[in-house]
Length: 234
Image (cartoon, rainbow, N blue to C red):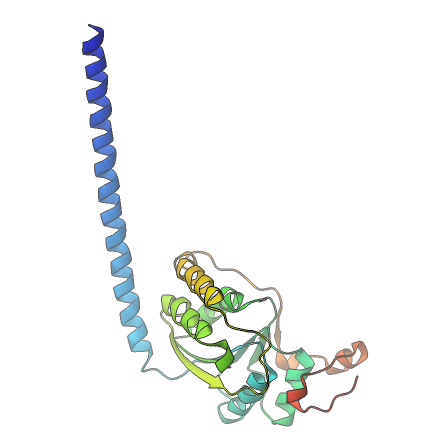
């Protein structure tokens, strides 16, 4: 009698495991199918975005040379908004645009990011809000290929085409690229590409360049990168 009860329980447990395994298989197949469909639709949208005009100049902070370059672009294309992520100090950027006689009303400074990953983490919601489809990514050769791959993964996941614009740097770069750093950032970018579809971090420190108070900064004191040739002594 006891053996029969044990056999019945074993059969029930085995049947239950089979049902759970079948459910897991169906769920995995269904989920994989949804991911495949999403990837196909996203790829098609990104492909079509490549033929559209540039919507924004997106500058990754790290060198004043990048801001000097985008100021020249602002003079030529004043209608295109500029988003500078954790760049030089606000008054230094203001002085660069003033020297270039470039418009400042369409330039925004984001100051929340502390890393390349956070450049995208905080700015993807801004770019999405602006309805961006095609991004001119401004960075330096010393920032490659990591920044380019991260942009293609993260911005591409939001159906934005990335057009890198690489700036020549003089001297020794402030940051060094290592294979492990590239691997780590690319890996977490792949994961965030999915999570960022539902999670939209908000940066509370965004300033319009035209509203930077230069007099206040002069009182506080500031200095700019030597390569900017701004001749400011504070």
